[in-house]
Image (cartoon, rainbow, N blue to C red; front, top):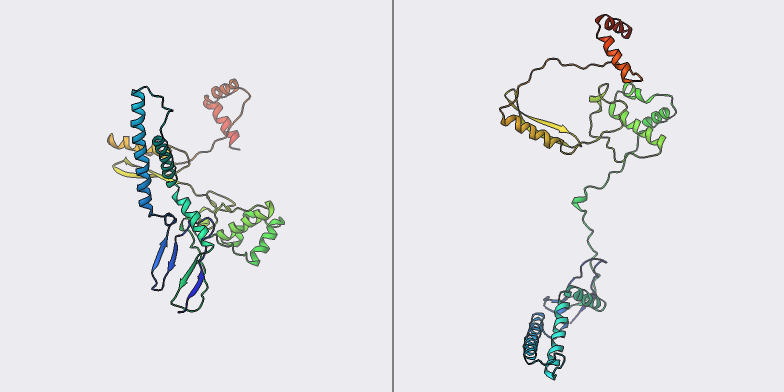
Length: 313
């Protein structure tokens, strides 16, 4: 009868130990556990040691109670009491070590792996163990970082010209006609000048044309802010929800409580008196007294007209 002998594949370092398996002539698998190293099944052994722990404990407690009643020294023990103490200690050691049965199983499994073979009588040739399957990527870690694309040669030439100072950075949007491309080139210029990457600042995913000439100049990326919602706000008979982009703690929560208070009191009404923005000049004085003197001076309409004419120039 032909037999096949092949070595079992060892588990990788740091992984949990596997149970040994042996394949017989009919393909039946027999699991080998750490408890098989004992002369009795593990649950029989546990039952015996539990009884061996309980019986001496009850016997010794009764003997010590009788000695206390008879005023007999406790350190005077008989041969039966000595055997009871030994059995109690031995069973206690076993029960304590039983909680570390996983550690015992790992020792037995590792020692058996050195000489363990799987015997298969159904084949006559030795087969190499199958290669381990590649580890699947963890979904929680996300996709691996993408390799940055190489910048086109035309853009590299523009970067070199901007770094040399021949073209100012603020005219890239106008000359290229592509706000996203201009932001990428400006970002590369900044990297070459400072020698530092901006990996934590995203570039794609934002419409740079929407901010051209409005709220941000010389963009190189964008920053994500958490957005909370407060409401409903009962205003002018409408139930409104107010989105708030902020990093200030408790701001959205306090606004939401205010919206709730307004809604429970019947709502609020609004009137727009003027919609606009003003920019005024600031005048600095060395003391508060001089500020008060200017205030008194401006309260005269004639003096105010004189100052307005001077400032408007």
